[in-house]
Structures are given as C-alpha cells and as structure tokens.
Image (cartoon, rainbow, N blue to C red; front, side, top):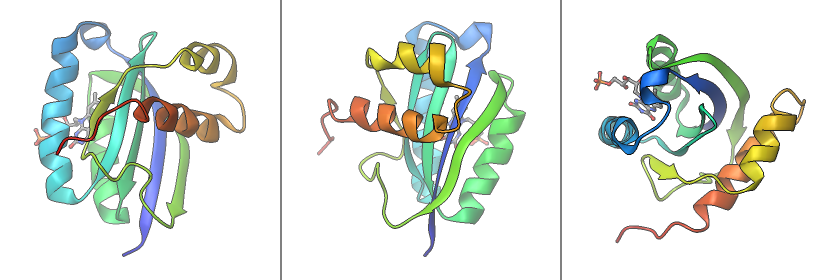
Length: 136
Ligand SMILES: Cc1cc2nc3c(=O)[nH]c(=O)nc-3n(C[C@H](O)[C@H](O)[C@H](O)COP(=O)(O)O)c2cc1C
C-alpha cells in the first residue's frame, strides 16, 4: 500500500481555541475513525492554531481531508505538505495530542508562510512526540 503524509495548519474557532474538553472530543472521534481507516498522526494546538499530521492511504486521507474542510471548529486550513512516504513517522498513535514545544512559537510567528513550512511543522511534531510515552 502506498503511504502518504499530510501536514496542515488551521485556525481554531473560538469555542475550541482553549480548554482541554474540545481537544479531548476531537481526539476521541479521531482515534475511533483513524483506527478504522488505518490512519496515524498527531495534533497540536498552540496560539489558536491547529497543526496536524496524518498519514495513511490516499483514499482514506482524502475522505478525512474532506471532513476536515467542512468542520466549523477550524478555518483557514492550509496544507503545508502532502507527499508520499516510505514509512509512517507516527506509527504508534491513531491520533495523539501533543503539547507544543518552545519552538512552536518561533514557527507560528516567523515560518508559517515559508516555503519549508511543511518540513518545519513536521519536525516540530516529531520533536514534540519524542516526549510522549507509547501506550502499551
Ligand atoms: C483540528 C481537528 C482535527 C481533526 N482530526 C480528525 C482526525 O484525525 N480524524 C477524524 O476522523 N476526524 C478528525 N476531526 C473531526 C472531523 O472533522 C469530523 O468531525 C469527524 O471525522 C466526523 O466523524 P463522525 O462522522 O464519525 O462523527 C478533526 C477535527 C478538527 C477540528
């Protein structure tokens, strides 16, 4: 099966821009659906932005992206990277919530529009995921 990885950034709607409950809702549904669809990835919320990476088969990703574009809990969804990959970078989670590392401020303030924003966002998520324990 050919694997793809998408990284996007979006602006959180006010109702979900802070507090843990909205995030727990999103992660709960994502975990259930993504297990079903063999998708893996990670989600970070910081400074009113969502940064998410999702990986899996093309069809499953495209169906998810369609739902994400219609979801009113965020707007201005911008795809930063969408590329074929050899293997999963986030194999351990259907969807995991990551705390933003300090470098997230720098990325959102200064590099969101940069040509290498996709690489930077991915590196940020990888960095943040290193501190997560993998559930048994
Ligand atoms: C920032 C954000 C990230 C999301 N990530 C996912 C995801 O990884 N997988 C998923 O199925 N839904 C995700 N959702 C929710 C979808 O937009 C949509 O509400 C959901 O897939 C609908 O699933 P349901 O038909 O089972 O209720 C996300 C929503 C937001 C706002």
